[in-house]
Length: 430
Image (cartoon, rainbow, N blue to C red; front, side, top):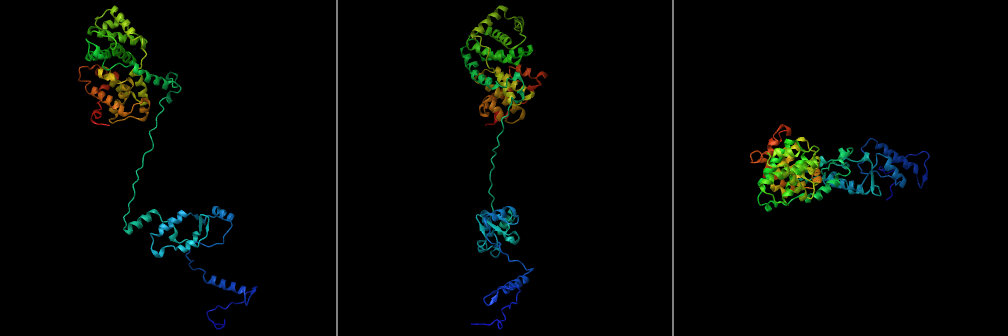
């Protein structure tokens, strides 16, 4: 049906446009005038809430420049598009973005360019606290998965020789080799823990009385600690190879101390002093004869690793102060008296003394990775010896042999014997 333009009121009559071009029966300029009228009528109105702005497809160079230079148009990755899809599931049906609006957007490779000015509030990423609030309002159960964080930071091993790098007496370059040699040789310095069975006239109690007395003699003479540990080592090694009568046992102890002084001390006690200490029970000739017998029995082997050499190293690894050092020596000297402690090698005795002293001072088990590294003993390996030391500590004052307790109960040793024993080591199991 043909309807003329004059009779149809719904058709806008175009006016003449200056410079218009003739196209068919109408002018192209008149159509442009009609579009301008429509644009003027829409000024100030709310823009259409579309998701993206459609632009002409630019070339690749223009895309790259736009990505870097244009702060308004930012790329949205496909993962963010997936997040929008998840967010839409939490919104009412009327507020959801239609899939057609996203489908009609311009896609360049893996990115979609969105006009920030025309984005609706629905398109903005939903904050986490808003999502949590919406889930709580929906009445659905919300459970947060608890993830246990594992502490992967290990305790560092301290370089205990760094402070002695410029000290030539510390021989830092060779200290590891020295203690490696001590660990290999300590087995040769040990004796059988059952050697007393071959002795017919003496027993382990007599040995304990002898060593307890020698500890007091060592303190009266003001000798070095190395001398005491070497003296006990010489006694045990000699008795393990030579049968001795009860009357000569004290002479064995005096001669062992004399040899240890000659090896360790600068100023050596004379034979006459040792005879006086023994209340003139022996003559000078007997002392010299026993000295010769002992050296030949031991084959003049005096260079052995005693617990003392390990104590110095392990105390350094524990970064010990004076209190910890005195308590460690107090515990290990209590162990020297006990015959049953011969079953432990010197290095383990030293490590257990340091470990027990740390537990006594701090009141809880403490054994750092640095101590474990330098001693080569774990806490499990030390616990048996440590419990024995705690038992010796408990009876040090009330037992029959109290020489070590009296020694460390003086101001010279800072009243170390007054420390309470770590009884919790006897009550707990690892």
